[in-house]
Length: 467
Image (cartoon, rainbow, N blue to C red):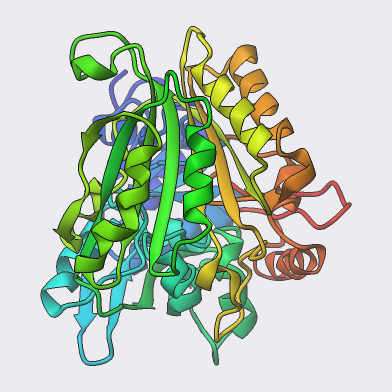
């Protein structure tokens, strides 16, 4: 429909008020700008707001939130839409793509990062100074949203979570106030935002530490595990002995037998072992050598590379798609459970699925200098099972549940960053220790008592049943 058709009186009133108070474009339902902003990488249950504000600066964010508060409407922010769960219905969606400024202070080794910047934006600005951020495996992800969830980095085992190294956050709370949170100003809010997610306001900018790394040794080995039933366990045994400067992960997927897929991989169970070594690059090949004996190697992308090409390490696909996923944190990966997990990954089914594991520990297990809300630091591994169906199906949900059940006795909790889709209240509670969750709920109640901020992971106090 066109921008002026089928608008309700309430929508027209909202759009008029927003256009009178913000400088950036305001998009109505049915317009190209509205469709683009609500449609991120994740295509299941997209946002359906009454208005989209394409914010030009922090003041536009403040004005949009203030209008929503005045009218009693929900408000949310989105940049890339990689992991949203339950879409916003009505209200105001703030599109942050224009807030993409990145400022590097090489002397202090910090970056000021706008809410619309992706990790690739930060990387490209920092690396010329010999510095890199604690970015994740997919540099196309929005840096702010990733960090609010904790932030599992390619250098996480060496330096910790991205949230551990945030210096300050500028945000708009549900009452339309611009605030700055750091260790001295709004310390409770600063604690909650770093790892507690986006329930507390719309962040417009963050300042974070950078690290003196500009090159990695890394990439992936693509192994034919069709006849190697314990390839996942082989990776686990190797990973357990690696130093903190090495972060690695493994995925298992049956590649379709179709044009565009390399011939040797078609119809095969491919186990992709990916690693990022941030120590001296010349030592990387020796660390990786044992992996070559796990299963037949079909493709090898391991090499020394500039951090600007860090996205090539895991080679995550970033095409828009409908997917859902479970994100578990476990204290161990028993061999038999891994063998069963690999069988699940190899089974024939009418949709694509990916089993994904990441080695944790190292600095990820250590408390940061300034405490934050990141949960379950005692976990040794992260497990995620992605299913690609739109809409979600009973068979896809059953697969994810079956995979999770294999590690039920070893699950420490759930991961905020690695849960893709609608998250039930008990699953949100499983992301944090009870004391942490109670504190998060108290802070949320103080800054957003009317629950105006729409978020993927709404904070629910332990045992209350109230999100």
